[in-house]
Length: 512
Image 1 (cartoon, rainbow, N blue to C red):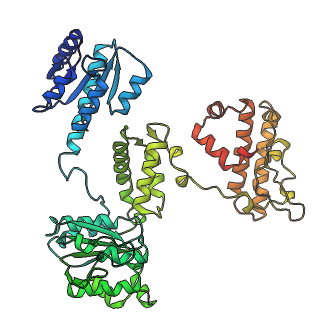
Image 2 (image 1 turned 90 degrees about the vertical axis):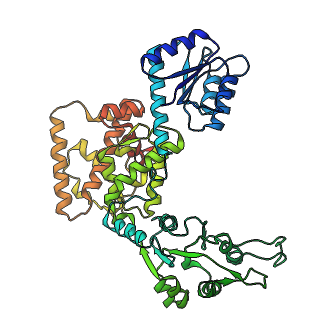
Image 3 (image 1 turned 45 degrees about the vertical axis):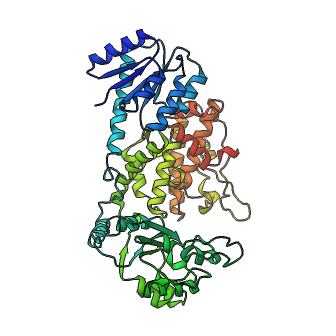
């Protein structure tokens, strides 16, 4: 392991840290100024840098910026006797690992340096080689079929068609096919044919000559020329305009093309990989896609499964994306509970892997705690309550309910229809419930009569309807007792603060 570098103009600070780190079997190299550190970086580098802020001949913040420019992944701990907010903000904005105010407790300083060393070693593992960060993940049988297909095509130049829903990772497959092909030394050029206006797409693909159209002031190489000797990935090929399909077919047939406005044929030494989320056979039947181009592209087809068909991969992908998102944001990775993982895995993810990655990024930024519970997941992963308007409760069903509970359950009725109004009813103050007594048994008995009456009348959604009213009554009462303090109300009810906030929104109590 490389040594810890300490830079401080105070000899006593250097001495104390040198001795403390030596006892921990850590190699140390000391400097008295930032200039000496920068000079030493020419032929050596540290595992961790510990620097003072105020030193003659240049500040620690300036040193931090210069060192980070040369070694972005190096953990730097900034020390100062001037513990002010400006110094702390400057240090962290400059990329400091931690801020250590003087005077410091030596064992705690050593512990902090140990943490920085561990971080440095983790960074080294990630950067050690291309295999450290996998290009694709998946243990499900459907993904293993994809991996086997990539392996069988590894020495081939054949055209490949990748099909799969949006967000399922079609470009990742295309990049893997290129990386493991004989053309891996050439460029990989991707273009989304659906994202470029029709009038510009021809020029994007084939390039144009100077003066070919208004605004064409210089000659421009198209994507086919840029991908020479490598791979051209045509994403969303099913949306390519029909007239351009003819030009693409000609390139695939004879390997030649013309720039827009050009007269000299150019040779295309390019392997084409196409992808689409559409049913191309159906597009051919509709006359929107050329049948001869379809057969040219559909030499080998790889189908990428949607995420809902490989749910066993979701926990692994979730942890991977949480770790990557934390690394990108420079924060500690969130840990997710098994219950939260089960909720994530149960979701259908219409946006597939891309949507899961976005969810993990949301969790990294928005989840309040380091350990992610079910309540900390984004709104789209929370259960959707059945609306009250879907349940009709006849007035006779409430007639026999004991007063306190009947007041909580009584729906807002339309006098003409006798149907439940969609809004959540405003509940009375908590004080009307009274202390535990025989009345408590009355409302429980009344609740049972209410449930029996609703079930007997053939109503649907009884559970959701009564649960919503009961939860609204409890939350309103707790907020009344705590004078609107939500955190205290949640604590007294025995639920999480995220839960009470979500319930207030779901039940429409914010509008009350």
